[in-house]
Image (cartoon, rainbow, N blue to C red):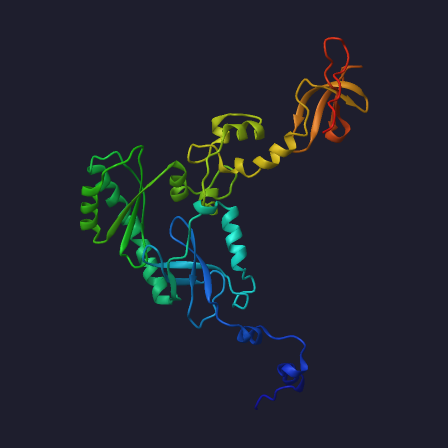
Amino acid sequence: MSIQPLPIFERDADPSFRSLETDAEAYAKLKSPTSIVVRGGRMKWIAEYPYEGGAKPGCGTRMIAHTHRGTELVEMLTTVCSNSGCSKSVSRQEVLEYIENSGGRDYPFHQEGRILRVATTEDIAQWNSTQSEVAALGPVAKELLRNSGLPMKFVAVEPIFGREVLTIYYLSEERIDFRDLLKILAARFSARIELRQVGARDEARLVADYEKCGQHCCCKNFLKVLKPISMKSAKLQKATLDPMKISGRCGRLMCCLRYEDETYETLSKRMPKVKARVETPDGPGIVLEARILVQLVLIRLESNGHEFAYPIEDVKVIPRQDESGKNPPTPPKK
């Protein structure tokens, strides 16, 4: 018995009877993007490359690109074409503003390259094979660095998709002449060797996993520019200066102290100093403690010695008196 299509289904399939397009119809009208923002490498650098293919890739698509290092497998983040295959595409101005707000010239952003093609299953299989060799390459590179006698600590090794470049990351407190070592490494791995010196924060970015907060280390997850953190930020935000509680996996002050530094700085200017004499709805008192984030002030009242917490809006600092017992004159307005 043959299947007869119902008239109502035939009507729904006719675009003239529908007010909305199907996903397939909307996708068919889209044009291929001309520029794609991708992420690649173990350091998760960002790049914008031109694209001349006919496919309409979406966010997360694996692509083969010719980068500043060679042929690499990269991950598509978004497109900068308003008519692309992803509804979350952004403008080039938005990309540049993001880079400027995230480190400016220090942000690892590249434009010297191009997208070659969307990665095939064979490309993915080749990349997985290359990644499986990293576990064997690491101990060999580590042993060669140790035998060189140079003051270098092996951190990580990173091959690229085309295998023409092998990057070895190392820690060192001084500049090193490793020209002889390069020859040994190149002969051993049959590739162009790039020895890259990193600091303690970059080491954590390469090898660390989770922080004490339960999340991935910020340096490994999304931070691209690792700026130094001052002890002033730690003193302002933390109730304790225990190194074990304010230090990250790298042994330096935690990067997250920088996120709210400006907010703490602004809010702290509104708070009265400890031991300052203030006026409250219940009379004058002395400031014992100030909680910046919740904008509360703990005050001991002069009338009965009781301690109460007041919001900053209900507290007014009493000006200090001069030697004559009078309040200092108010400076004239400019």
